[in-house]
Length: 368
Ligand code: KG4
Ligand code: ZN
Image (cartoon, rainbow, N blue to C red; front, side, top):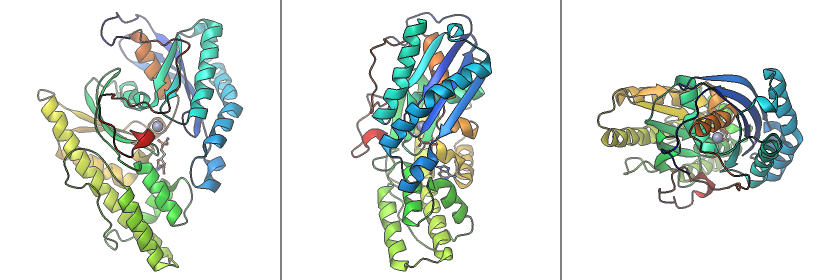
């Protein structure tokens, strides 16, 4: 496949997108206009949070079974809502990785079946590319731009240079940022997913009471690390047991303050690197995606850091920041416009870095 050679397809492209890489089952129909504008024709997301909550994290087997149970109905719903038939589509896009293999197989196999029956092009999408290109759908952003992806499974800083062209500036070497929130919540006996609850408790807590470590702060590069912070937090919590409500609030506030300092430091470095790489770029943009973008305290910090660095901060609407199928359909349409289609025997890839040239981050596993 080539990224530059083939001429783009003219006319509107309507693509069905399917997302099943983690614990959201989603389907959406998106139309891309020839000049790059877009319409979301219909979208559905079914969160499995309640299925996984008793376990404090996503259980792969439960997730895969739930995708099987719900995906067909969601696809039927988005088709019915848009009044379209499969024969009206220009392509079928499904997340092919990275993610949990059971879920990926459910979505990708469904997409292959539809593509085969209706003789449509298949687009096997990298989930991270879906997050990376969303700001082009919502804001019509031009390349290049900086992306900070902060979700339960991923924490990365990337330069988005073009469709299929990414360069990773940094990634987590252990936990993802959302995972750090979820593990904190678990330690403190709060619910799952932990982010919203930790944020709520942090509002009334004292951010200075616990001097938690700020891993990698001030170090070169744009990598992240959160496991040392988690260990320190666990120790503090254990030493205070039984925890009062005030203790929990203070731990949450101190944790969020530490996280915020770390992300701010990495953002600053990434913006510097972006400027060095694109010295002539006027009005540079930093896009934030992933569920952690819901956090108001972090959003305020990001707005401040972006402004300080002379960048515009762009955060897509929250339902497009978290996992969804609109981003998969849109990435599919962008790839289809460049004729970057996939064969029907394309395989699901539990690990699939967006930037294959980036050095593997030790311990990062699927998050790399
Ligand atoms: O992108 P997302 O919906 O799903 C995947 O990771 O696949 O992100 C979910 C993550 C969870 O870890 C959740 O705890 C975190 O985003 N999150 C938050 C907040 N809302 C969700 N983290 C911090 N503050 C929040 N308000
Ligand atoms: Zn995601």
